[in-house]
Image 1 (cartoon, helix red, strand yellow):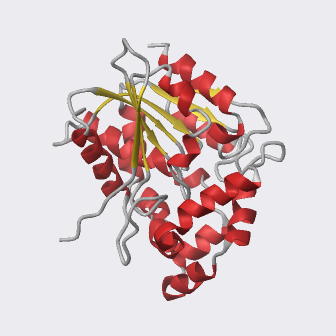
Image 2 (cartoon, helix red, strand yellow):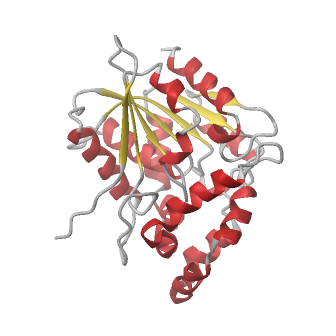
Image 3 (cartoon, helix red, strand yellow):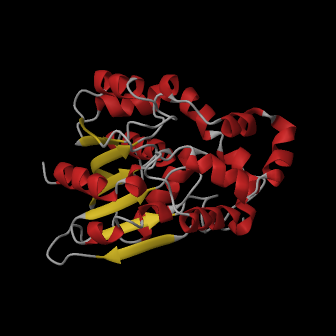
Length: 284
């Protein structure tokens, strides 16, 4: 059996607190997405933990491989156990793809599944948690559904294509720098990560197939919930996404950031994002 490894990063932060925070990143990037708020988070939490999911960033990228949200949730559980935190109450802050992994962790926690982590709170951000309001980018749709053509397309992916695509999901006044885009691309290209994009993108189909399980976890939980939302997001557009979220998840509080903030709120408005999260985490 081949052992796979995932990159994880941990900071021991503020003394006198036992609070633990786990950060779950989005597609197609990595734990790099949290770098602008990392220091601020370590001033509030005793331990801040981030990982690159399997197939992302500087983690292993096996191929062929059937990547799944269930497997990624199990990776998070294994990491928490490895760090000796199985008995700790864990706060989760997630984005995009990470939102769905977080919902699977929430489902397992609420159903007391073997090996589950104890979810103390969950804050989501700009994830396509509702298939009916989720609008994948054109390239994502092509890659996830093109069968035998997909491996050819992944080999054609280059920095210019990635740069154009990622900039489309940032707001006009909150664009990433060229250096940031290169850093994101470096994480993707590590271990030929572009070649597993089509496999990773099956999460979109998994969201549809397991909607009842994951949306059900969100609507039925008694765990403190929050949503931080960049309203200019073309992937989860305003107002449809927010209206559905507020209708279905009535126990959750919501922070809507500046109207110019798009799909990557923690990178586009790190101060607004952190302040919104701090308000939530201090509210219970």
